[in-house]
Length: 217
Ligand code: MD6
Ligand code: FE
Image 1 (cartoon, protein in one colour):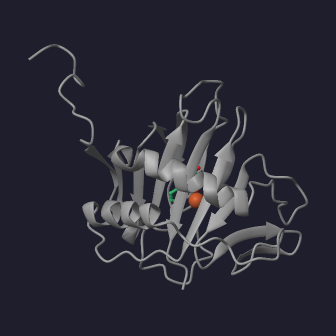
Image 2 (spheres, rainbow, N blue to C red; image 1 turned 90 degrees about the vertical axis):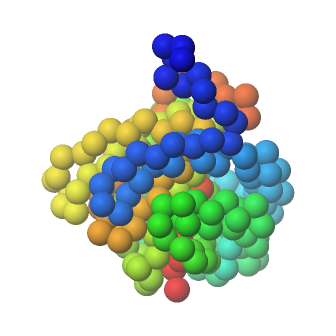
Image 3 (cartoon, rainbow, N blue to C red; image 1 turned 135 degrees about the horizontal axis):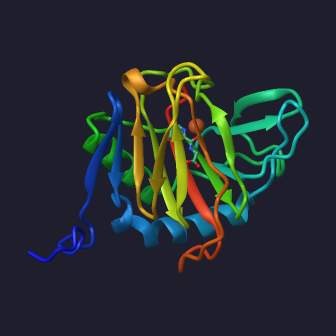
């Protein structure tokens, strides 16, 4: 053995870190799919481009978003909701690519949530400085299904809190290929993303991409 903790991790291998009951980080789990994910992402963001949505309070979000799947998460002055159509193009959201579905289902399975069948995938693009304020994911009708969240590109610090907004948050570093699976007793925990630091990743340049898969209905 060498002294390097990571020396014997082969491509495609993953290790897990429990965050709480019902929440686990599957480190580097998405790496075997990353090329397929990026190829599909390019096709679908040509059809449904990244855009900065407006919050109900009237602010532009710093994170640029798109969606794929039967339902897409949208926000505007009238509130948050899931919609079958992209309000910007008037078209249905692009179908969820096979590589997305297979990766999400495999990760959910590995985390102990078998049979995950997402109908929505929110795609978040963070430029340096972009952040996501502390929030709960509670617009989904099916709270029994987990959320599968995939980090690609430059690293981020994920804030993982409790079930009350004021609860103390853990800071969880997330790297390219990390997958957070989140369900059961952790499903309604507050969470967010600290402002992204300037960095470079060969696949995404200065950006971080996050895919969050949900079962909405
Ligand atoms: C992000 N993720 O990582 C934003 N929500 O860019 C989320 O808001 C999120 O990662 C629920 C479960 C896992 C997540
Ligand atoms: Fe969230």
